[in-house]
Image (cartoon, rainbow, N blue to C red; front, side, top):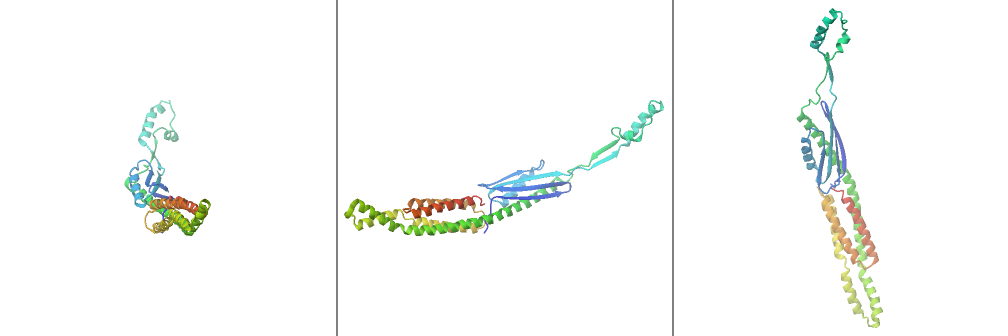
Length: 293
């Protein structure tokens, strides 16, 4: 069984030198494949690369990929600007000699603007191309994990769908049995009505003739045969490789069409009830199919 869901979640983290990042990949139901990307500024190329990576892995569903990245805080470095310090000292010598100022202290000199210079080591010095490649690698890991998440949920859906197909098969068998009783019931019903209307002139040949006409109109053999074929087709699709959700969705429409016709042709309450239960089960099957890739 290779059923894959269209919903899943995965997260991956990575780092390179002074950069760290976290990548989240989510997917939900979608009629076609739609890839949405949100990433850090300055990494616009990532969107195209990640979109291509998603398209290589998935066929249906809305895929959302979010990358949060940041550079580590830059290291602070201090240095003594001797040139500016000597200028301060030279400028103050004449004032000290004239008694107009006291000799400066070392802590006072160091507090003067420009004497101590504080600079940051450049953050983001990592090569941009290498950084993008590393992020794309992490995104590929996240998408692979998302694919496995969808496959795991798909295995659960597969069991549910198989259970519904079993239930549909049982209802088809019950409908076949109920339909086999219709001719006799129709004949008995017509016999009563014709006797009521015609009295003694209601011949057995007339009763059989009218009942045969009605039996042809309410014959559901073709609908039952098609339903049996649809069940077999559904099982084949569930066992096949590749995305089968769209074809299963079309098949459920055919299921419902035959079930509706069966109900409309039903001439007995037993068959009508079976048909209604069949429609309810097909609808539950369809709801699960909406989540299949």
